[in-house]
Image (cartoon, rainbow, N blue to C red; front, side, top):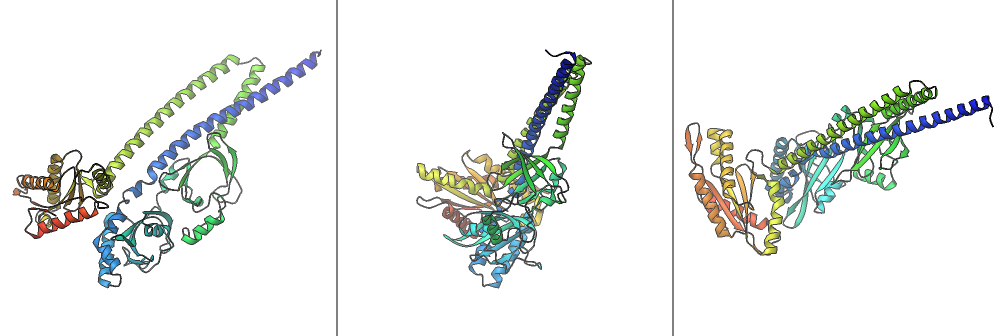
Length: 524
């Protein structure tokens, strides 16, 4: 049996052990809670980055296809040795690029040589350059739409490239490419305490809230990845050594605790982060959110010290009840703060959902008239053709063009022309069925798709719309302006691969209607 001094030593050792263990477990629990909070914040920023990363590029998604299908582009590729054809193509691309506010639009022949570009007037014009090594060109030649981020080999400015094959009949004769400037996209990320980095399929960071992290691999490149970068010139002259990062801890939820050298990369100090990663749907990119561990570590240390102090006071039988009450209040405050954070996260989630819906509506709708846009029309038509073939019902198209629309704009101004287009859209929408598709193709040209409708019935629909429009004069500057339209009608024919021939027939019929005096309906 221990004597008095021995007991006191034993109790002291027991108290020290209890305090040490309690301090450790308090630190561990607080750190775990801090990491959980960081994980939730990182997950929120990850979802926010996913929702907003492609927002600047979504509005350009349709542009390569529009350019690829334009008659001026087809003519330039078919007559690449004709200076007049190339001059028209340069002017068309220059005007289109100016209107769309993209960085550059250019046209490549089947060998990857740029034959026309929107920057044809500039000293660093792409005309004459060969980009056959670029993946977006190889995708287009293989009849796929291309998506590629990289450093411009001519301009030395980073960009996101969208490409689309140019077809002559069933043959690929070239590619239309739109370059989007994304150099400023990551500048706004620096306002958050979390660091954000986007890594491409080869493991290279190309967007980051930390400028010194850009164009660094997340880890040493594989031989295959290095060869791919050299072959495609993706980061010519800007690729840097791998990010000096080491893994400290793998967490059960998939997050990691990592250590990274500071901005000067000299190894004099290190920063620790909770790393949350996620893929970006529709691409081979990975988004990384680095949440600083400094605050969580500091809180954990403070909690550990407080716990040790509380246990010392408990061992001395002082302030025991007060300490319990303080901790109870702290837990209640933490609970309320967590509830408020959860409510804020739900609110942000609802805002993101609403933003996503608004972006989707904007991407398929013509902003002036409220009609569907050309992109939505061409996304919907294959489904109508498939249904027509599957259920053996007719499918007709109506091409509509406002007669003398340029004269209206010249005499009364563009607001008057806009008013005419809006009135025409309203009449058409009121007259169509729910299954019908009505879209603005551009300018004063519109297109309707009428499922389960024969060509003769479509002609009656077009004629009724023509008469309704004539019977509703538009009042402009006190004048009652009578508006007329010309319409071309065609029907999809069984056995055709797609709606392309039918749409061309409708367009040809519209041309005949306008050539024969306008204000009439012609069936092809």
